[in-house]
Length: 373
Image (cartoon, rainbow, N blue to C red):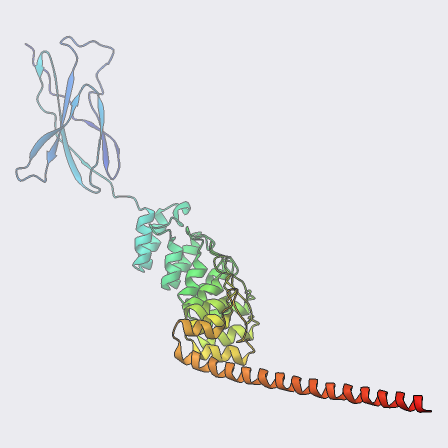
Protein backbone atom coordinates (compact mmCIF):
# COMPACT_ATOMS: atom_id res chain seq x y z
CA UNK A 1 0.00 0.00 0.00
CA UNK A 2 1.41 3.38 -1.05
CA UNK A 3 2.11 5.80 1.76
CA UNK A 4 0.13 9.10 1.64
CA UNK A 5 2.60 11.94 1.23
CA UNK A 6 2.98 14.47 3.99
CA UNK A 7 0.71 17.49 3.24
CA UNK A 8 1.81 21.06 2.90
CA UNK A 9 1.08 23.19 5.99
CA UNK A 10 -2.24 25.07 6.10
CA UNK A 11 -2.44 28.46 4.42
CA UNK A 12 -3.54 31.37 6.60
CA UNK A 13 -6.61 33.31 5.44
CA UNK A 14 -8.41 36.09 7.30
CA UNK A 15 -7.26 36.72 10.85
CA UNK A 16 -9.16 38.82 13.41
CA UNK A 17 -8.90 39.36 17.14
CA UNK A 18 -10.97 36.23 17.84
CA UNK A 19 -10.77 34.05 14.71
CA UNK A 20 -8.32 32.44 12.27
CA UNK A 21 -9.21 31.12 8.83
CA UNK A 22 -7.06 28.26 7.42
CA UNK A 23 -6.96 26.62 3.96
CA UNK A 24 -5.26 23.38 2.93
CA UNK A 25 -4.66 21.11 -0.04
CA UNK A 26 -4.95 24.20 -2.21
CA UNK A 27 -2.83 22.81 -5.04
CA UNK A 28 -4.89 19.65 -5.50
CA UNK A 29 -7.37 19.52 -8.41
CA UNK A 30 -10.87 18.94 -7.02
CA UNK A 31 -12.06 17.58 -10.34
CA UNK A 32 -9.57 14.69 -10.17
CA UNK A 33 -11.16 11.72 -8.40
CA UNK A 34 -8.76 10.30 -5.81
CA UNK A 35 -7.63 6.74 -6.50
CA UNK A 36 -8.14 5.62 -2.92
CA UNK A 37 -11.42 7.45 -2.17
CA UNK A 38 -12.31 10.73 -0.58
CA UNK A 39 -9.61 12.51 1.43
CA UNK A 40 -10.27 13.24 5.08
CA UNK A 41 -8.48 16.12 6.84
CA UNK A 42 -7.59 16.61 10.48
CA UNK A 43 -6.30 19.86 11.96
CA UNK A 44 -4.77 20.05 15.39
CA UNK A 45 -4.05 23.05 17.60
CA UNK A 46 -1.38 23.21 20.23
CA UNK A 47 -2.90 23.28 23.69
CA UNK A 48 -0.57 25.65 25.48
CA UNK A 49 -2.65 26.17 28.61
CA UNK A 50 -2.79 22.54 29.63
CA UNK A 51 -0.51 21.09 32.31
CA UNK A 52 1.03 18.84 29.67
CA UNK A 53 1.48 20.85 26.47
CA UNK A 54 0.47 18.99 23.33
CA UNK A 55 -1.77 19.06 20.27
CA UNK A 56 -5.49 18.38 20.20
CA UNK A 57 -7.98 17.99 17.37
CA UNK A 58 -9.88 21.17 16.44
CA UNK A 59 -11.19 20.11 13.03
CA UNK A 60 -12.00 16.78 11.37
CA UNK A 61 -13.80 16.53 8.05
CA UNK A 62 -13.65 16.70 4.26
CA UNK A 63 -13.68 20.49 3.72
CA UNK A 64 -10.55 22.29 2.58
CA UNK A 65 -10.96 25.31 4.82
CA UNK A 66 -12.24 26.21 8.26
CA UNK A 67 -12.61 29.29 10.49
CA UNK A 68 -11.49 28.73 14.07
CA UNK A 69 -13.47 31.08 16.33
CA UNK A 70 -13.68 32.04 19.99
CA UNK A 71 -9.97 32.80 20.21
CA UNK A 72 -8.23 35.28 22.48
CA UNK A 73 -6.96 38.58 21.02
CA UNK A 74 -3.23 39.14 20.55
CA UNK A 75 -2.49 35.47 21.19
CA UNK A 76 -0.20 33.02 19.38
CA UNK A 77 -1.74 29.81 17.99
CA UNK A 78 0.04 26.81 16.34
CA UNK A 79 -1.59 24.40 13.90
CA UNK A 80 -0.67 21.25 11.95
CA UNK A 81 -2.50 19.20 9.29
CA UNK A 82 -2.81 15.53 8.43
CA UNK A 83 -4.87 13.80 5.77
CA UNK A 84 -6.08 10.27 5.29
CA UNK A 85 -8.06 8.03 2.94
CA UNK A 86 -8.66 4.35 2.33
CA UNK A 87 -4.99 3.90 1.55
CA UNK A 88 -3.86 5.13 4.96
CA UNK A 89 -2.78 8.22 6.86
CA UNK A 90 -0.13 10.83 6.15
CA UNK A 91 2.37 12.29 8.56
CA UNK A 92 1.76 15.69 10.15
CA UNK A 93 2.55 18.81 8.18
CA UNK A 94 5.02 21.43 9.24
CA UNK A 95 3.58 23.47 12.15
CA UNK A 96 2.45 27.00 11.34
CA UNK A 97 2.21 29.87 13.85
CA UNK A 98 -0.54 32.51 13.66
CA UNK A 99 -1.14 35.50 15.94
CA UNK A 100 -4.63 36.93 16.42
CA UNK A 101 -4.95 40.70 16.15
CA UNK A 102 -5.65 43.27 18.83
CA UNK A 103 -9.30 43.58 19.79
CA UNK A 104 -10.76 46.62 17.98
CA UNK A 105 -12.02 49.49 20.10
CA UNK A 106 -15.77 49.71 20.68
CA UNK A 107 -18.19 52.16 22.24
CA UNK A 108 -17.75 50.25 25.51
CA UNK A 109 -14.08 51.23 25.53
CA UNK A 110 -15.08 54.86 24.98
CA UNK A 111 -17.60 54.81 27.82
CA UNK A 112 -15.06 53.17 30.12
CA UNK A 113 -12.45 55.82 29.30
CA UNK A 114 -14.97 58.62 29.90
CA UNK A 115 -16.01 57.13 33.23
CA UNK A 116 -12.36 56.98 34.27
CA UNK A 117 -11.86 60.61 33.12
CA UNK A 118 -8.93 59.46 30.98
CA UNK A 119 -8.61 62.10 28.27
CA UNK A 120 -5.72 60.40 26.44
CA UNK A 121 -7.55 57.10 26.23
CA UNK A 122 -10.73 58.86 25.11
CA UNK A 123 -8.77 60.47 22.30
CA UNK A 124 -7.11 57.18 21.32
CA UNK A 125 -10.43 55.32 21.19
CA UNK A 126 -12.11 58.09 19.21
CA UNK A 127 -9.35 57.93 16.58
CA UNK A 128 -10.26 54.29 15.93
CA UNK A 129 -14.04 54.53 16.09
CA UNK A 130 -16.32 55.80 13.39
CA UNK A 131 -18.26 58.98 14.08
CA UNK A 132 -21.52 57.05 14.20
CA UNK A 133 -20.71 55.42 17.54
CA UNK A 134 -19.60 58.53 19.44
CA UNK A 135 -23.11 58.81 20.91
CA UNK A 136 -23.55 55.11 21.70
CA UNK A 137 -25.17 54.89 25.16
CA UNK A 138 -24.19 52.82 28.16
CA UNK A 139 -26.56 50.36 29.85
CA UNK A 140 -28.30 53.29 31.58
CA UNK A 141 -28.97 55.09 28.30
CA UNK A 142 -26.32 57.79 28.87
CA UNK A 143 -24.12 58.82 25.96
CA UNK A 144 -20.40 59.50 26.56
CA UNK A 145 -21.13 63.24 26.33
CA UNK A 146 -23.89 62.97 28.94
CA UNK A 147 -21.55 61.12 31.30
CA UNK A 148 -18.74 63.65 30.85
CA UNK A 149 -21.14 66.60 31.27
CA UNK A 150 -22.57 65.19 34.47
CA UNK A 151 -19.19 64.43 36.05
CA UNK A 152 -17.66 67.78 35.07
CA UNK A 153 -15.01 66.58 32.62
CA UNK A 154 -14.74 69.75 30.53
CA UNK A 155 -11.76 68.63 28.42
CA UNK A 156 -13.47 65.35 27.57
CA UNK A 157 -16.67 67.23 26.70
CA UNK A 158 -14.70 69.39 24.26
CA UNK A 159 -12.96 66.33 22.81
CA UNK A 160 -16.25 64.47 22.27
CA UNK A 161 -17.83 67.53 20.65
CA UNK A 162 -14.84 67.85 18.32
CA UNK A 163 -15.55 64.28 17.16
CA UNK A 164 -19.20 65.08 16.45
CA UNK A 165 -20.97 64.17 19.69
CA UNK A 166 -24.57 65.40 19.61
CA UNK A 167 -25.41 67.83 22.47
CA UNK A 168 -29.11 67.23 21.74
CA UNK A 169 -28.89 63.46 22.20
CA UNK A 170 -31.29 62.35 24.95
CA UNK A 171 -31.76 59.17 26.93
CA UNK A 172 -34.90 57.07 27.38
CA UNK A 173 -36.37 59.61 29.83
CA UNK A 174 -35.73 62.51 27.47
CA UNK A 175 -32.87 64.08 29.44
CA UNK A 176 -29.96 65.57 27.50
CA UNK A 177 -26.40 66.56 28.39
CA UNK A 178 -27.36 70.13 29.31
CA UNK A 179 -29.97 68.99 31.82
CA UNK A 180 -27.48 66.67 33.50
CA UNK A 181 -24.81 69.39 33.57
CA UNK A 182 -27.25 71.87 35.12
CA UNK A 183 -28.39 69.38 37.76
CA UNK A 184 -24.74 68.71 38.65
CA UNK A 185 -23.87 72.42 38.76
CA UNK A 186 -21.45 72.25 35.81
CA UNK A 187 -21.86 75.84 34.60
CA UNK A 188 -18.87 76.00 32.23
CA UNK A 189 -19.90 72.75 30.58
CA UNK A 190 -23.42 74.11 30.23
CA UNK A 191 -22.06 77.14 28.40
CA UNK A 192 -20.01 74.94 26.06
CA UNK A 193 -23.00 72.74 25.28
CA UNK A 194 -25.17 75.80 24.57
CA UNK A 195 -22.47 77.13 22.24
CA UNK A 196 -22.59 73.83 20.33
CA UNK A 197 -26.35 73.86 19.86
CA UNK A 198 -27.91 72.53 23.07
CA UNK A 199 -31.43 73.91 23.48
CA UNK A 200 -31.94 75.70 26.80
CA UNK A 201 -35.73 75.26 26.84
CA UNK A 202 -35.86 71.65 25.64
CA UNK A 203 -37.97 69.34 27.81
CA UNK A 204 -37.53 65.78 28.98
CA UNK A 205 -40.47 63.38 28.80
CA UNK A 206 -41.83 64.63 32.15
CA UNK A 207 -41.85 68.20 30.80
CA UNK A 208 -38.91 69.39 32.90
CA UNK A 209 -36.41 71.86 31.46
CA UNK A 210 -32.77 72.56 32.30
CA UNK A 211 -34.04 75.28 34.67
CA UNK A 212 -36.11 72.72 36.60
CA UNK A 213 -33.02 70.52 36.94
CA UNK A 214 -30.74 73.39 37.96
CA UNK A 215 -33.26 74.32 40.69
CA UNK A 216 -33.47 70.68 41.81
CA UNK A 217 -29.69 70.59 42.08
CA UNK A 218 -29.64 73.83 44.09
CA UNK A 219 -27.08 75.59 41.86
CA UNK A 220 -27.83 79.32 41.94
CA UNK A 221 -25.15 80.36 39.42
CA UNK A 222 -26.50 77.89 36.87
CA UNK A 223 -30.04 79.17 37.55
CA UNK A 224 -28.86 82.77 37.13
CA UNK A 225 -27.15 81.92 33.82
CA UNK A 226 -30.22 80.14 32.43
CA UNK A 227 -32.48 83.05 33.39
CA UNK A 228 -30.05 85.52 31.83
CA UNK A 229 -30.29 83.51 28.59
CA UNK A 230 -34.06 83.95 28.56
CA UNK A 231 -35.27 80.60 29.90
CA UNK A 232 -38.98 80.66 30.73
CA UNK A 233 -39.28 81.09 34.50
CA UNK A 234 -42.83 79.76 34.92
CA UNK A 235 -42.73 76.74 32.62
CA UNK A 236 -44.73 73.85 34.12
CA UNK A 237 -43.76 70.18 33.91
CA UNK A 238 -46.23 67.68 32.44
CA UNK A 239 -46.47 65.38 35.44
CA UNK A 240 -47.59 67.67 38.27
CA UNK A 241 -47.83 71.06 36.65
CA UNK A 242 -44.91 72.34 38.72
CA UNK A 243 -42.93 75.46 37.84
CA UNK A 244 -39.27 75.69 38.89
CA UNK A 245 -40.37 77.71 41.95
CA UNK A 246 -42.83 74.95 42.89
CA UNK A 247 -40.14 72.33 42.46
CA UNK A 248 -37.92 74.37 44.75
CA UNK A 249 -40.66 74.49 47.39
CA UNK A 250 -41.15 70.72 47.14
CA UNK A 251 -37.51 69.62 46.87
CA UNK A 252 -34.92 71.98 48.38
CA UNK A 253 -36.45 75.22 49.60
CA UNK A 254 -33.31 77.23 48.72
CA UNK A 255 -34.28 80.76 49.74
CA UNK A 256 -31.64 82.46 47.57
CA UNK A 257 -32.75 80.68 44.42
CA UNK A 258 -36.37 81.46 45.34
CA UNK A 259 -35.55 85.18 45.54
CA UNK A 260 -33.79 84.98 42.18
CA UNK A 261 -36.75 83.26 40.50
CA UNK A 262 -39.20 85.78 41.96
CA UNK A 263 -36.97 88.68 40.83
CA UNK A 264 -37.24 87.27 37.31
CA UNK A 265 -41.02 87.19 37.46
CA UNK A 266 -41.89 83.78 38.91
CA UNK A 267 -45.62 83.70 39.71
CA UNK A 268 -46.03 83.05 43.46
CA UNK A 269 -49.79 82.54 43.01
CA UNK A 270 -49.53 79.80 40.39
CA UNK A 271 -51.30 76.49 41.14
CA UNK A 272 -50.28 72.95 40.22
CA UNK A 273 -52.61 70.25 38.86
CA UNK A 274 -53.92 69.54 42.37
CA UNK A 275 -54.65 73.20 43.02
CA UNK A 276 -51.73 73.62 45.43
CA UNK A 277 -49.91 76.95 45.53
CA UNK A 278 -46.21 77.53 46.13
CA UNK A 279 -47.05 78.65 49.68
CA UNK A 280 -48.92 75.43 50.36
CA UNK A 281 -45.95 73.39 49.12
CA UNK A 282 -43.46 75.33 51.21
CA UNK A 283 -45.75 74.96 54.23
CA UNK A 284 -46.16 71.19 53.96
CA UNK A 285 -42.35 70.86 53.67
CA UNK A 286 -41.75 73.07 56.69
CA UNK A 287 -39.71 75.67 54.78
CA UNK A 288 -40.33 78.59 57.18
CA UNK A 289 -37.97 81.09 55.52
CA UNK A 290 -39.49 80.40 52.13
CA UNK A 291 -42.97 80.74 53.64
CA UNK A 292 -42.02 84.15 55.06
CA UNK A 293 -40.55 85.26 51.72
CA UNK A 294 -43.67 84.24 49.81
CA UNK A 295 -45.91 86.03 52.32
CA UNK A 296 -43.73 89.14 52.09
CA UNK A 297 -44.11 89.02 48.30
CA UNK A 298 -47.88 88.90 48.65
CA UNK A 299 -48.79 85.21 48.67
CA UNK A 300 -52.37 84.67 49.88
CA UNK A 301 -52.33 82.43 52.96
CA UNK A 302 -56.15 82.27 52.90
CA UNK A 303 -56.37 80.68 49.44
CA UNK A 304 -57.56 77.06 49.27
CA UNK A 305 -56.65 74.06 47.16
CA UNK A 306 -59.22 72.21 45.06
CA UNK A 307 -59.86 70.10 48.16
CA UNK A 308 -60.49 73.16 50.29
CA UNK A 309 -57.19 73.07 52.21
CA UNK A 310 -55.13 76.12 53.15
CA UNK A 311 -51.38 76.43 53.68
CA UNK A 312 -52.02 76.17 57.42
CA UNK A 313 -53.91 72.91 56.90
CA UNK A 314 -50.97 71.44 54.98
CA UNK A 315 -48.49 72.53 57.65
CA UNK A 316 -50.63 70.96 60.39
CA UNK A 317 -51.06 67.72 58.43
CA UNK A 318 -47.27 67.30 58.25
CA UNK A 319 -46.53 68.54 61.79
CA UNK A 320 -44.54 71.59 60.65
CA UNK A 321 -44.75 73.30 64.04
CA UNK A 322 -42.83 76.51 63.23
CA UNK A 323 -44.80 77.09 60.06
CA UNK A 324 -48.06 76.31 61.89
CA UNK A 325 -47.17 78.84 64.59
CA UNK A 326 -46.37 81.54 62.03
CA UNK A 327 -49.46 80.98 59.87
CA UNK A 328 -51.72 80.55 62.89
CA UNK A 329 -50.72 84.00 64.10
CA UNK A 330 -51.56 85.44 60.68
CA UNK A 331 -54.92 83.69 60.71
CA UNK A 332 -55.75 85.07 64.14
CA UNK A 333 -54.94 88.58 62.91
CA UNK A 334 -56.95 87.96 59.76
CA UNK A 335 -59.97 86.76 61.71
CA UNK A 336 -59.76 89.75 64.06
CA UNK A 337 -59.62 92.07 61.08
CA UNK A 338 -62.62 90.34 59.53
CA UNK A 339 -64.50 90.61 62.83
CA UNK A 340 -63.80 94.34 62.99
CA UNK A 341 -64.90 94.79 59.41
CA UNK A 342 -68.11 92.98 60.22
CA UNK A 343 -68.63 95.10 63.33
CA UNK A 344 -67.97 98.26 61.36
CA UNK A 345 -70.43 97.02 58.78
CA UNK A 346 -73.05 96.47 61.45
CA UNK A 347 -72.45 99.96 62.83
CA UNK A 348 -72.83 101.41 59.39
CA UNK A 349 -76.06 99.46 59.02
CA UNK A 350 -77.35 100.84 62.33
CA UNK A 351 -76.46 104.40 61.35
CA UNK A 352 -78.18 103.88 58.04
CA UNK A 353 -81.31 102.53 59.73
CA UNK A 354 -81.33 105.45 62.16
CA UNK A 355 -81.02 107.91 59.30
CA UNK A 356 -83.86 106.20 57.47
CA UNK A 357 -86.04 106.37 60.53
CA UNK A 358 -85.26 110.08 61.01
CA UNK A 359 -86.12 110.70 57.41
CA UNK A 360 -89.41 108.83 57.74
CA UNK A 361 -90.29 110.80 60.87
CA UNK A 362 -89.48 114.08 59.12
CA UNK A 363 -91.72 113.16 56.22
CA UNK A 364 -94.56 112.21 58.59
CA UNK A 365 -94.32 115.53 60.40
CA UNK A 366 -94.30 117.41 57.11
CA UNK A 367 -97.43 115.55 55.99
CA UNK A 368 -99.20 116.40 59.26
CA UNK A 369 -98.46 120.12 58.80
CA UNK A 370 -99.88 120.03 55.30
CA UNK A 371 -103.15 118.48 56.56
CA UNK A 372 -103.56 121.08 59.38
CA UNK A 373 -103.18 123.96 57.00
